[in-house]
Image (cartoon, rainbow, N blue to C red; front, side, top):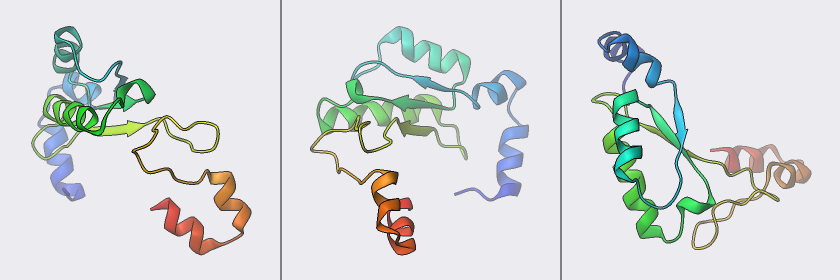
Length: 121
C-alpha cells in the first residue's frame, strides 16, 4: 500500500485525462470483458469497476474478470478499485459459492459494537 506522499507522486505524474479517469468506476456487464469494453477502460484510464450479479457465474470467471480489470485499470503504485453492489439483506448480488454476510440492519439489530466492527472490516 502506497503512503500519501507516494500516492501524490504517482497521481501528479499522470496526465490530466488519466487523473480524471482514475476517479471513475465503470459498470461491467457479463463474466468477461469484450474487446470494446477493454478498449474503453484503457482509453479512458478508468480507475475501477463495479460488479453485479451477472458478473459472477462461477468463482473462476470472477477471478479471471477481476484479474483482467486489475491489469487494465490498475497503474504502478495505484491498483484498481474493484467493488461489488452488495448491500446484504434483499440486495444479495453475490450468490453461493460466495460468502454471504449479514445486512447492516441485521448487524445493527444485535446492538453489538463488536459485531459491527467484525462485519465492517
